Amino acid sequence: MSLLPRALLLAGIILFCAFSVHAQAPAGGEALRLTPGQAVDMAIRNNLNLEMARIGLDIQRRGANFAWNQFVPSVGVRGTMSRANWPNVVAGMDIPPISIPPTTLPQWTLLGAFYADLVFNLAQIENIRVLRQQHAEGLINFERASLQMEQIVRRMYNNILLLQANAALLEESYLNTQRQAQMAEASFNAGLAPRLAWLQAQVAVENMRPAINDLESALETLMGNFALLLGLPHYTSFELQPVPLGVSVIPYDSADLISRVAAGNPDINALQAGIVVLQSQRRAMRLGNYTPSLIFGWTVSSMFDPQLDPLNNSWSERNNWNRDGQAGGAFSITLNMSFNGFLPFTRESQQLRDMNAALQIQNIMLAQTIRETELEIFTKINSLERIRANMEVQQATVYLAEESFRLTEEAFRAGLQDFQAVQNASLALEQARLQVLTQQFNYLNDLIDLEYSLGIPFGTLSGNGSM
Image: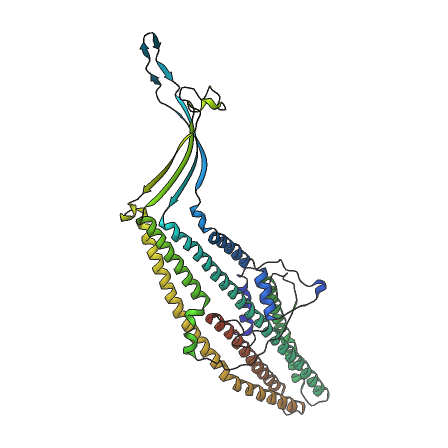
């Protein structure tokens, strides 16, 4: 893939990344000086996706810290007002000399109570573990999101440097073409070259302007997206510190690096943490389905005098509540056991089956991710070795292209070569330099991807960790 499509593709990918505009650009249009590490810190501090992840992590942290509140009783007050469907008639008494006629009690009754209930089940103990494991999973996911952000920022930082270097090479080539056009004009005026050579040189100069404009536009777009990724206005200008472009031998073999995958890769760690949470949730579900619950209850209640109508008598009169004016209530212990979990067609049984299926899917995803990561590491190592092996040849190619261009230009000045030969030599030199530069930055970006896959700090393999 050529340089321009690669740059535009990266700029398009970054548009899908979340960004914020909280940070402020330097005043007065001054370029913001950045190192890769400073760019990473700024992106992690200002990115909205990571801010949402922090809020979610705070929720999980509170859940883990207050997991014990499952054993806090449910406390409250309740009032019940009911009406009997038929009047309640109390039979009278006729005991001489006393005669008590039948009495019809009010149909409305009123009961007030203060209650405290506590339900205990073994599943609650497991639920505490679930909340703490979810917090641990949240920490791992937040770390993974931060590493992914750092990976994107470092790769984009390198691509900006590559595009700037490409622009510098193209500008140098443009200046050379202008100089060659001046030489062609001088040779034409001196009668040493035909007018066609002069016109060809002028056309070559004009043909380079669109390429320079396109590259400058691509660079401006890429830097605008980089600014947004860091939480800065899109028009922020940057002065990026160069990174070392040395290509060194990785001090580990493929087997050693692949063996580290399961222990360090952020994606694998996140899947493993999710499996731990699902296993604990399944244990809690089983305990809830197959073990009894103890329900502790305590109430203090008072009933409105059933001989008085609560609609026509004062509720604030203490003597109207209970005949003796004292509050009633009770303490209770209830053993509850549901058999729904033992029946295969119930909702509880189906939920447990769904949980088992979710665990199977998660384990399959873990196995697949491990295999894909091992293959990715193997591929990256081969790519790095290929680049390293080709660099010596490419450096020699640049040297030969420089010599060829110098000699061709001298021969053109002496009238021994036409302008087309000079153009071809100049193009070959530009392509050779660009190839070396592109391979050097590809090497750095492959190292960044390899470091993410291994779960080691960025810069460990390249030696740029301090930047």
